Length: 342
Image (cartoon, rainbow, N blue to C red; front, side, top):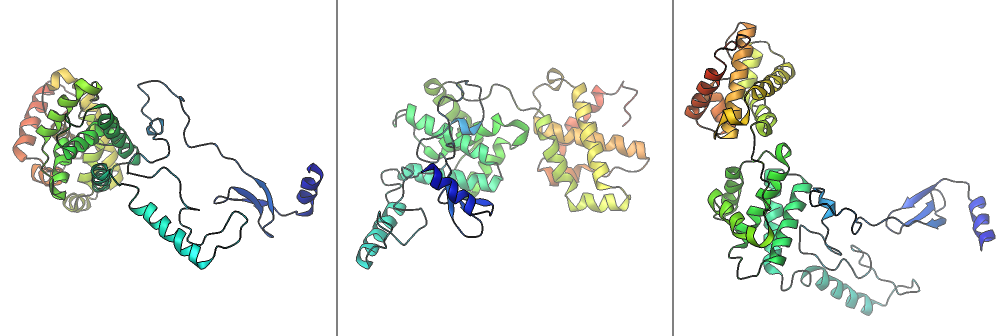
């Protein structure tokens, strides 16, 4: 057998390529099968037992995907194949072809979510919300993991509304990923409202408190900080038409302006610790810090500011009076700092 194998290897001198569907190395010219390739599975059981491990691949459901109601992971023949062969490779008769095609169709469609209609609808909603918020697959899978964990460990009588439950799971996943997903709880609630579900920030927080006794404190105890929102706010502002027009008017390079604002915002926030900021809304406080940074830059360039409270209010969706109130506080804090001029 070894002699025959080596003979095949020497007869074909072309470089082999991997056929990913069949899992075989074949010759790129003549199609000769060289050898079979065995790949490692996409998960490893007991790979990491730490509770602080945040990689979504650590949480897998054997034989199915987390973010949707799936089958057992098996198909009649390959997933998208519609022509069937027997074990010897011979094509089945037309009558048998029709039979297996019908069986494959019903398995692929209905049998995947029969008696799981609630989970099917809720996870479909999860995928819609994640797509609208443009969140990463890691956050989607993490939210799906929380949903599966809670529905498994909490009795059906304790769960009154699955829509609010999945909203809570998305919120927890967003909080875990911090600046990589700078979405506010109000924005999350608004997306559910747009889709047609009555979800408010208060009901999401109430749901967290409701399930915590059963599954432990899932919510990250670290509160949101203004630093988490800086990059997102600057991106929204710099891409605003009103800001781009004013930058063009003052002959400012967009990238240089953006980099300066990022550095100055983080510099100002480093000088204001959490205790000094008090209980102020971190998102609006980040907007006010951006407004302050632009004022400092304008003073340095000896020209008028690019950003106004009206422009920031429109771009960042927050009230002008809130920006004024936070700016007044920031100005008071840095009043005696000679290195900063407003």
